[in-house]
Length: 364
Image 1 (spheres, helix red, strand yellow):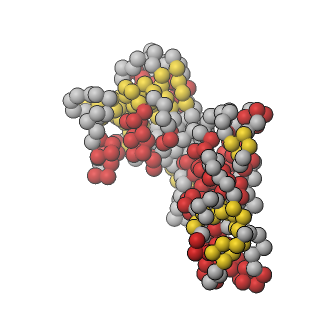
Image 2 (tube, helix red, strand yellow):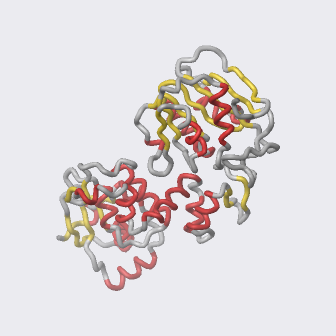
Image 3 (cartoon, one colour):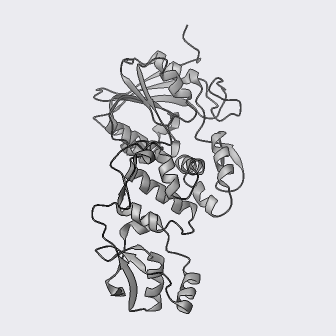
């Protein structure tokens, strides 16, 4: 059917997922041969498929356009928008945006729910046996391994996605670099120590030796990486939940007694704020001592009266966590940064205290 262009709206989700730039070639094609495919709109005249084409014909001054109107009802519009753009050539950033939208729909990490829908159909029993990542990868025309790598890059250093789109990095190069504990400097192709590294097990063991815990509680490790911290926790706590890519901690809604992690530094404030909402007792973050400085961090990290900083466990020798020989089994000293376990405890009253670990060593 024909509809007046002035009555059409871009669906609000579209701008969250796709970029409407680089319209020149498309506009030239439309001006020469017209629209070969009608726009798809919902009951509110919001464009589900064809937002770039709508932008072009608006610029070209068209008055009416052919559309197919579909009934969405209680279906999730994100699934429909992504489905109708399945054949579109997408940037890596747009693929990440699709991934984040579908992750929310599917409740990432809980891929066996029976109430999920795709288009108008309920997901069948055999589909529900697949992992959430498998389901999303199929909808994005990616392999599950490709999606895993892309999601890992985004989570560890989202700025690298632009370098992928600019052609300065490949997915495999960025993924292997991050996994090895190195990063690609944004200023050029130089690798240096990364904020994300494997935490030597002795560091976690020293936390458990110097801070009291109720080991009958459940402990969460939401940035598991290669599992160095969680492997220590599993030796002590009766129950340990650990995850990384399959679930986004910043979307977490479940409650946990204890949280212990070496957080991604670029998201540390967000991790602290989320921990204050989902942790019942205490949470412990391994951070540089200099994290105490800074007006930007003071309020979000240290200003809570309900969940204040209780204690710092400071390592006397500086730790060289980015050293090539540093690993889960090997602690290297002599770095430029001092590190400490920052420990927040719900309902703690009093000023924070400081204790020192002079020489990290395993308990006898």
